[in-house]
Image (tube, rainbow, N blue to C red):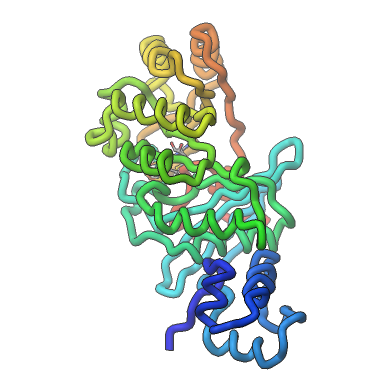
Length: 344
Ligand code: SAH
Ligand code: SF4
């Protein structure tokens, strides 16, 4: 018998699956899962009989951690294996103020093929289940204590796995369990126009980040194949709709590729794209990926681009490299030879 994965069940689903009454039993089990219980025996307020019955029909984790890598800057990367032997990575980032953010994957691999991204070189193996998504967060909390934020910026494209993403968010934000605030959740998209409208209309109202990379249509098509069916004009309209509908400022992300998307013309297009939109711009100097034909800009090229954007009236943040020594930085997630890269 295939056992059910408990990490993605809401209390009422737990009750119905196990025919439990009274309903507070479902809440108790749900609470234990949110607290990261990793054995049924740890659920001390349940009867031994109920614990045995749970263990017969359900599993607390459908994935397992196969490796833990730690960098000097506090970044932790977990390599996780699914039941069908796929490797997925999830990362914990700690900022200077000590805030901890989980960077979670939604797919094993990615079909979008962005030219600068390691995950893009893998192709898509499959969507992750809601349980596999929630478990990444639970494993990270086990390693690092209570986390402050979650960003769906790991492997894969979240808006192409919306059902599982929604379910995972519903579980993590439920007041009866982990009770994470949706203000602390960011979904990052390559720019799937239909997905942005879907999220705006049906929720959840999370923070949205658009990986714009460049507002120059031809360069964007060259770097990001998904742009051919999601034009900049349509994307801008979708972002504007999202801001209006949710009242939330959107982040525009741009990975900085030396000599590729940092010219004066690129800056002007970005300023024009952002005009009259309530957006913030996050710049991420390219994290090197072996075999890919790009270069990280130096401090001068970066500063010049930042200054052009600021002169154009944009709010700009330059994101620090974190986790580079363990290939845990943005765009560096992919199947890696763990033994070669471990730095602890
Ligand atoms: N698929 C989603 C989320 C995962 S990628 C998306 O594309 O938004 C998360 C972020 O990493 C994106 O903003 C992407 O542009 C950026 N990224 C990808 N490869 C990178 C690299 N090598 N260096 C720096 N950022 C990179
Ligand atoms: Fe996929 Fe995002 Fe990487 Fe593009 S940047 S290949 S969408 S994970």
